[in-house]
Length: 49
Ligand SMILES: [Zn+2]
Image (tube, rainbow, N blue to C red; front, side, top):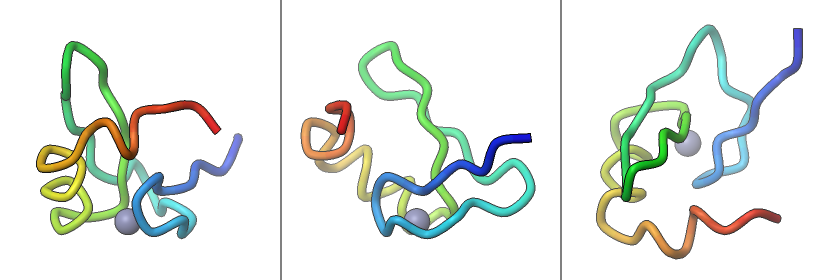
């Protein structure tokens, strides 16, 4: 099982984390706070590393 990292705060995501749909893509973050940040500023977080 791969450990995912939250694209916002770069912490490991526990359990299933929180999924957010932005621009037709689903991303997983660690918490509601980060979900809000992704929705506010998706371009910053959607780009692949
Ligand atoms: Zn996070």
